[in-house]
Length: 158
Image 1 (cartoon, rainbow, N blue to C red):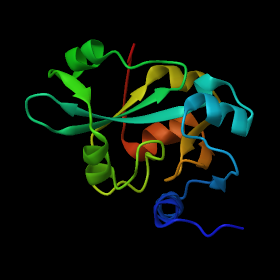
Image 2 (image 1 turned 90 degrees about the vertical axis):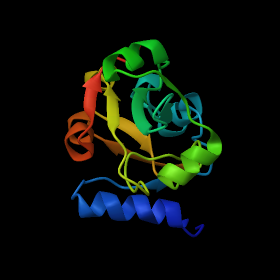
Image 3 (image 1 turned 135 degrees about the vertical axis):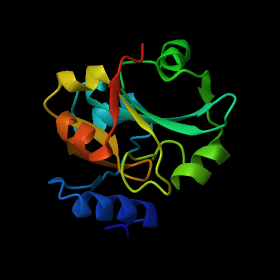
Image 4 (image 1 turned 45 degrees about the vertical axis):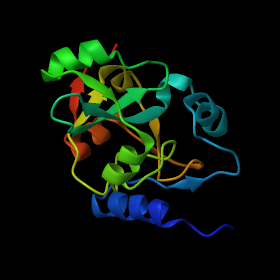
């Protein structure tokens, strides 16, 4: 078996510290996209959590949006909710703020505390799947547990 990366270990440690009962799975195939992840874990695309980092346009602050794999974030809608325009963060900003590369950003084990917003559509499922620090590591979680342990604000993103 392949040795876990430090990013995956960071996520595993964070999950354990929060007493979240789940197992990080490192898969032989990529889970970088929602479609790839859904195939890899045998779920619907909507059950995949896309962890997307955005940046506020004027204050340059990061915000993490955890959205359903079936949805695209409407930047105008989210900007109206938070009171400031947002834009997708650059790859370097993502790594600097989260400690993860794009495609492996996890809601847990973040390098810094980042305001988190959760797509209300994720709450339609019993189990959802999120990235665990690399492009092929994932874990399953109940959406209510995701909300309570990330202190995420549930919003509409579309």
